[in-house]
Amino acid sequence: MADGSAAFALTLDELRELTGYAVACARPAPAVLERERPDDQRPRAAIDVAQAFADGARRTKALRDHAWATHRAAQEARDAGQAAAGDAARAAHACGAAFLHPLAKATQVKHVLGSAAHAARALELAAGDDRLARSLLLATPVVVDALRRHPAAPSGGGRVGELVRRSDASLRGTTETR
Image (cartoon, rainbow, N blue to C red; front, side, top):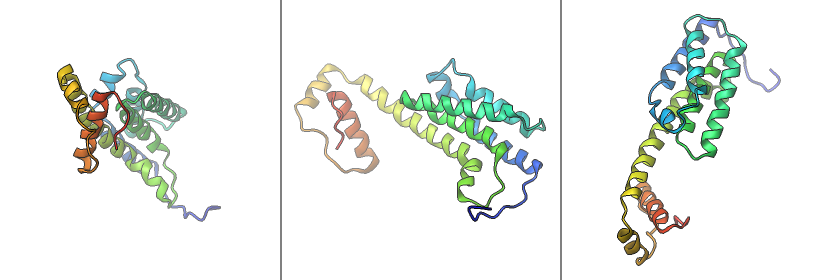
């Protein structure tokens, strides 16, 4: 190989197995995607096409087309600040697994594990953002007024501290989260 990566054998059956794994990882928790982008069928279609390949269908251009379309869906969701970006990205990785390159390169690992990683991140974001958003909705004008009379939340405190600062900044209507 020109870049020094060693090539190895990767059979069609192995690609089907890898794609099946990626699809299995991509399937859980579609609720985030369906809630935030109910009319966007690209990720679901990508998962269906990838599953068909894993089940024995031919590896066609449709897989690549669905993967690229779903990457666009992920970017659109990311640009909108939606947790659904992870749902769409994992569907794109499921499709892309069918085209894993038989190269001994670390970058190829994400083609195998990308759907699992994006599924985990989407669930993490959905849980954190939903809870934070809910708490922000519960804050009455009295709560906001009282907060504004105090100094901004302090730094430190790990992830909990970070969430406190995000809540504080949101309720105060500022972007500072120290």
